[in-house]
Length: 224
Image (cartoon, rainbow, N blue to C red; front, side, top):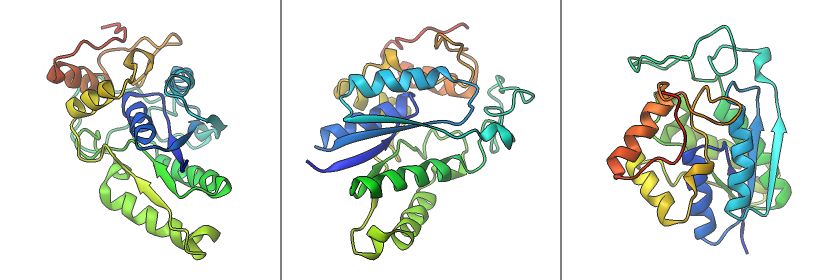
């Protein structure tokens, strides 16, 4: 079977991306990054999701981005916004996070001799993050094929973004159709140790609106 590295945060989108990769016939190698994020319960969720969806292997790489800070997710002195009023790039954006994560996925993919990486980025409900845009993914893929031994030898790497143009409603429906257990996932930017969601951060708002639009009940617990 063909192999794929799948970036798995433990959230709704990455779980659906993993399910899609599996459905397309890939042996899935899930990769999660412990970067010092405020919502560390998502790593527990990632383990459960990887097991539930039959990942061949699941790696959690520790890389402490709190040394840099600059984001509400990596700096405890910056509050996670809960007003839902932000229109620009929010303070929950982690500088260069997707570039770092994709680089690690690229390294593992080349080691595994696989040519496919799946990532659950989305340009519809993407919270204003610049590293979730199609042009960014295209640029990284081009760089990856210039920068690796595999790429130079003609083994082209492809970065798959199956959720790029889907609404949250469509992502949820796709995940449910593929057997994703969304009760295992953690999307909240400030979930507690048990994975309970705050219900008021941007990620919670987007998730709740998506389930409502899909006409489905969100199985996770919200504190508000």
